[in-house]
Length: 275
Image (cartoon, rainbow, N blue to C red; front, side, top):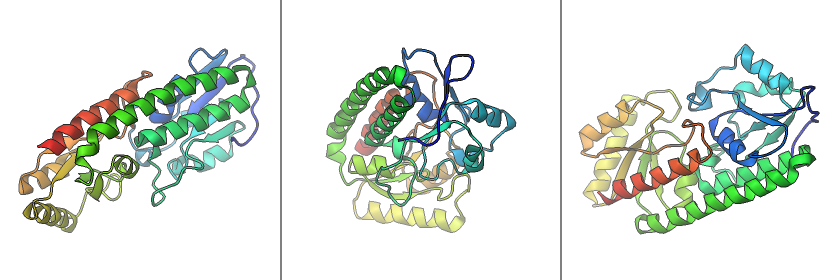
């Protein structure tokens, strides 16, 4: 379930570090009321995709002081692979064992994927910190129940739109689209942080015009973490409206942040796919 060995630091706290925001929100739920436990986050909450992040000296110190490091895995943390090799703490890989779609790491964007990762983390922590094992597992059970309940609601309310084509900003939504029966037809940025070429923009516009000529519904989405300029260009040329889907890589530091973001995504999709 986890690699390495962990020993509680001299100050008595069991230090758990998440590599980035969505894992940290999971930790807030899993570790609630756990005794002598502290949780922290490596990349700041406003970082967005880890492809945009570079490790700092402060990060290295945090890694060194951590008893447990929670990583997503599936290639998401390539930027700290070497640093993690120097860690004396244990590593829990949340995505380990989840069936990947073309090696895409954005598992948590799907509620089912998020529930899987919560369970993985909780079981890893329970194995590493027996004192709080029951707390971790019960907290995870409660949180997963909330995630699953929301997933069921989303599936029911999005079922009328099954098969609808969507274009997202980058490749963060394949698991989400699969869970809710949406047709992820294209992405605006194939590489995070790389503006689409003129040919790529033209191809996207051609795709949209073809869908519209065939009276097929297609919806266009940007993300709140990035500029929507490319999406706006596409929208202007095709008559579509730009909506925003949140991959939950940034947000408020509160336990229900993921649930609230997914609820907002649900309402956005219902509006976008109904227009």
